[in-house]
Image 1: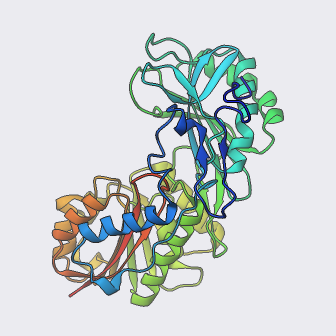
Image 2: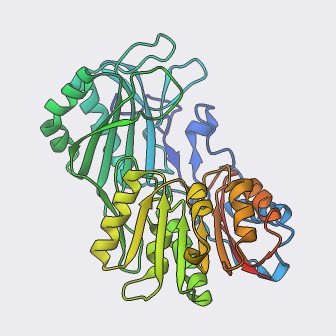
Length: 403
């Protein structure tokens, strides 16, 4: 369906209301009805959410001095998420776009107010397109159907990337044939691709990606720099907070003024490119295991006129295999939730020539564990970045200096 089903008298079911008080949390009917509990803290005043997250980080990171904590960066109470990973459920003609319920049936969340407006506005047209395509949604309990997910990413200028995750070549052919219809339905679509995931397993995408339109979505991150996001590249889910995070890391690096810098787990190059800057003499190298992300970073560097290198490889293996003569004066790490691990932390601890480390983490627990393995470094400044409002997740960044 293209509209939410009727609910309580006076307001449509599934829509969220924003109280009159500026900055107050949205009141979400999905949450109140128990249809979605992803925003577990949505009933907690936002100011309290920030205080609690910083308190949690301070508790986990007792080595960071009291005066080293900078004011946390808020992520907003609504309209902040730049990517929707929508489960396609329901049945032909009555498609749901949202999540799976406990019984494996689709739960429609098309009016979710944490999504950026460009995403919310596109979802009804996307649902109609799917219904008209005749592709059956994938039924998880019965393990049959074709269309599993649609990933929608919005750029700051309103451009969209659409990724359809399907089971078979037949679904790919249908979507390829109907591309003109999709472009009419969603004219802001700048990138369209199809991902093949034939197996029945709990992942969001498969390895094979087939482009149908465009190659990358330009994400304006401030300072005149656009990061090119390809379909299988990672980018932070909150653009305004990502801008603040990149700016903070760049400020720390500028203050340390290293002649050379490595950005390990560099993704599409956000930290490296912001910390290099056009015309800088600093030698910057980014390492990322995803070749898609490396291609994105190279294009962004080329278009911005930034002299930075990017190579595909495992961050730990690259670091351990480097000669002493090649070591940089500073390193940025932005690992997945598991952290950098004992091996890379031990290497940083023993690499005496590395004077500064900027560690950006989406998991304070693994951050604390890694910092404990690097006692030669002292935390000079730290900051919480609320990338994920209304949840207990957060991003934290720490500037480390060798004692």
